[in-house]
Image (cartoon, rainbow, N blue to C red; front, side, top):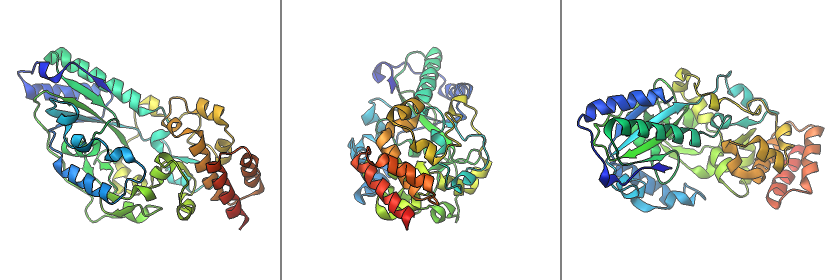
Length: 360
């Protein structure tokens, strides 16, 4: 997060509409594909969040229930906030259809957003530069930068700012970019004109719901995280439920299936940011190759990557499940057994499950 002087000391521009137009141009020049501006009225989104939490769909992501109304009342999180500048940055790798990778049981599938460098730091720096450019024009003003951090409802804000509509899979959808993009926000006290939301274009399509491997999208616009592969492989710290393990296939970090199912992603362009290009061969790695990494290798090969945050133990857990879902040749069994003695109890449990599954 980045922040400026107190909101109450801000100097407001005499031409808000002109400044808003220039902000969008500066954002584009900094590598963002789009910027929009919205007010801070999120009561409806807050009500949906509270209902979702009451159903226990957040699983062990207890942080989702923290901070109370600061999530849907931005001025409580950052006093003085009047507007939110929401930006998006495309990241889709320039590759053949990722579904071909999913169909190869020996391949390790990593969610496409995590193939390159961690986007958080890069986007924070770009947003900080955007704030500095605004200050050159408008004088000192109050602001705070967020990129998937703090209690910020980034998707509802992006919807209100006109960056896209909320798809039935709960990801933002844009007519030109599909859903392959990151979001960031600049909370500000500048009284800028706001943008209009765009029309929802999901219609009667249920492709994302129908193709979710674990049926985690329990109804349109509602995801039970406890069944979501992204949650299970990244956020969930413990044992992956037995009945869901076969459904993970070869997905070892995250899941893109609902994005791949969405017809609007046929129109998404490849990302233009070099830092988001695949690193360390993660876009073509095999399960056996990644399972052979000890902790030192894992830390070295995931430096600067979003993957590092799950730690080596969860990485091994996920890979053990994926190996249990392969066709099960002798090499796979040997690799699993070789790790069993030194594995943590969590990883050992999943290795034993994989070995039993391969022996069936």
